[in-house]
Picture 1: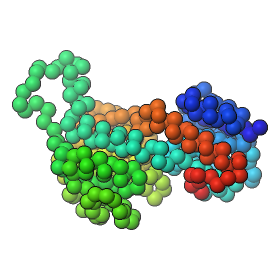
Picture 2 (picture 1 turned 135 degrees about the vertical axis):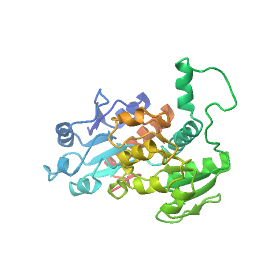
Picture 3 (picture 1 turned 180 degrees about the vertical axis):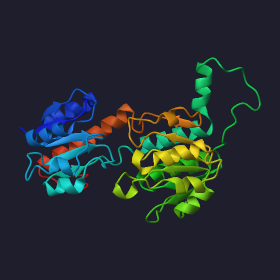
Length: 317
């Protein structure tokens, strides 16, 4: 029977579906796989259902001319932790789970926008610490989101879902920066990165993680942003030069930031943790049971189709 390695504990519904089709081995830890474990997985299994943190770089594939493993089904839409070209060179198909994550990630972006703009994290900490002295007219004044201008960097599925929420839910003007124009059902204008930075009250990053987007956002963009603007990242941590972001916040060049991802996660710099103007979430983008089930079932379907000799729905290489 086809052997599949599942690198993290997944929802029961997903595991039950996988067991219908394969002999599965599930690691009982949520820590990323070490290099030796990745190599063993390629040797001992026909397929691997992997996820963020399992770094299949070119060195992992270098020792194999024809590994037993023929497919890596990524649990997640982002697959920058897998060198898809090197995998293809080793005869391994790579898949991901687009679509399943779109709305949940867009909802998380809105959570970060609202929490950061309205200083919700700071306010909750005040209440929990017993420091709240009661309502008064000038207490914790934040950014009024309705009617503002949002600038979205990366107008794929997730970027469009964020823009839709901003326009229809909050009456925002939508600017976006993307390699190509997008047709959407609401007013949205494609602009340069420089114009987006200077005009937006809220800047949201929604580009995929890849070599070409590494440190796409850095000191130049932060210097161009309005001092009253906030910055939100729900993409990948290394899309942003974290040191430049910290400097911009410390120097007051931007008003605040909402982050769900970090350049070296799970490490979060002490400087960020100490700032009241920053909202920090532990990579919650898709953290809802039905969403994680949908992602897992999509990954299992990619595996099933591959070994059934059918067209794989979500191949990326």
